[in-house]
Amino acid sequence: MTTAIIVAAGKSQRMGAGTDKAFLSLVNKPVVAWSLLAFERCADIDAIVLVVRKDQLVASKAVARMFGISKLRAIVPGGARRQDSVRAGLAACDPNTRYVVVHDGARPCVTSALISDVVKAVSRAPAVAVGRRITDTVKRVEKGAAVAATEDREKLWVVQTPQAFLLKTIRAAYEALGKRDVTDDCQAVELAGEPVKILESRAPNFKITTVEDLQLAGALLK
Image 1 (tube, rainbow, N blue to C red):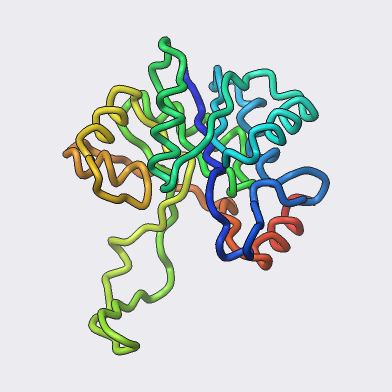
Image 2 (cartoon, helix red, strand yellow):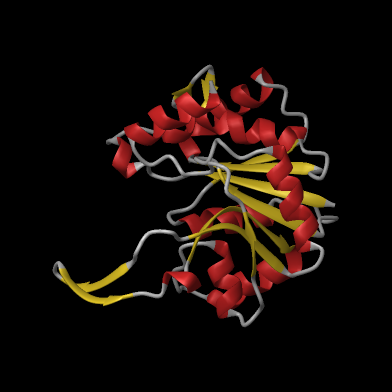
């Protein structure tokens, strides 16, 4: 069994105070509905767990009903950090779950085809992340605005979601993590000493963090 955890419990600080970007209107539906529908339509996903802010639990149920999300098994409140929200999602997974796919609800351009590719890849590795090669020159700045070094971009990737895991692998990684912070789920697996593979994708799959991102996503999804 493969369960998707869609994480949409962020504070949306760069969108302005009091804003929950997951429920902003994008073309003709809320931002989070685009991800819900992509996972709903993916034949390789058996169940969905949605993690949202506590004050959006009722709204989330309404969105799921409105768009016919039949695979939704649980809606749970998130935590103070993203990793706390993922932990809440993991705790809500069906006991029969073997693989888990974690996705940012603020990445509405995800497709069912990409989700299937990630699920297929995790059958060959304990952890898989979608990513893109960096094509720009990358500078490292350690203090102020002074450049410390130019990085070798041939070795650098931008990592996105969805990210897929053996459920026992990601659970063990988070148990071992303790109170340390990570910026994505694969980092927890890396710190636990497990291998992570990157699945290259060149399709638009950016995360909405600003109003400009919302406008760009709207143009792509029309």
